[in-house]
Length: 269
Image 1 (tube, rainbow, N blue to C red):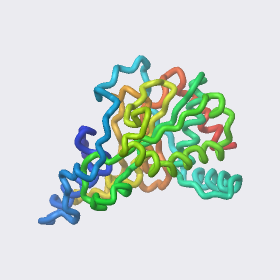
Image 2: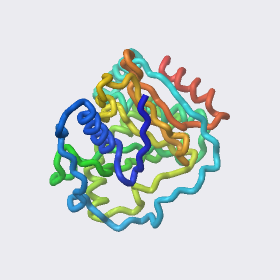
Image 3: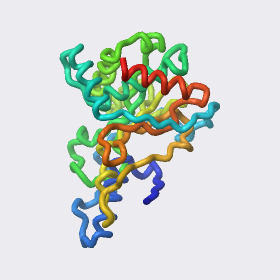
């Protein structure tokens, strides 16, 4: 077992995974990393005025429990086929799983008013002067979708998946607006409202490819217990399974069982 703690002011997930891969290559006898690290490339990254004066977050007023939920590859395939049949469009696993989590969590907490789904998007591909690999620093944008709780609870899975896909497709435009300073609200200001869910997808980060000489990891697990906001990490299931696992701080104890029940009902309809 290998444990790691890193500060988000230094790395994002992709960056720290690249760093770990270099360490593993050296541990396995390589004298030079397969990808040279780029420690500082700030001149290529936009720096519009920040609206948030402080990165500190107030302590949460609710006690969220650890949540884990499994989605088998068979379940995901069936749901994707169902949504694609209804819409005549193709969707990703993240889009389908995120839609399920957002809908079921909104129902489980019996949310009132606006609810938001936020998820982290990599923007390295939008910075054309930045080399394709090797940059370790933060290079992400936080996409946010906000709708009324009533609308989310009434929406079909296909409608919610479309919301998420549309948000992903808006990334180049929104990032360009932010880079030029043409934005009203700070997209990097993390919400700590209980109505809001923040998701991150770790399935394609190189954590899963890091080999210190004992083979690739059987599983990856985040520690989100110290986070002052509602967050879930989407992971690969432990080997040899090939589905998806949710881990994180998603609901309070009061809403835990209903959240599980809503997910089970949604995936079995």
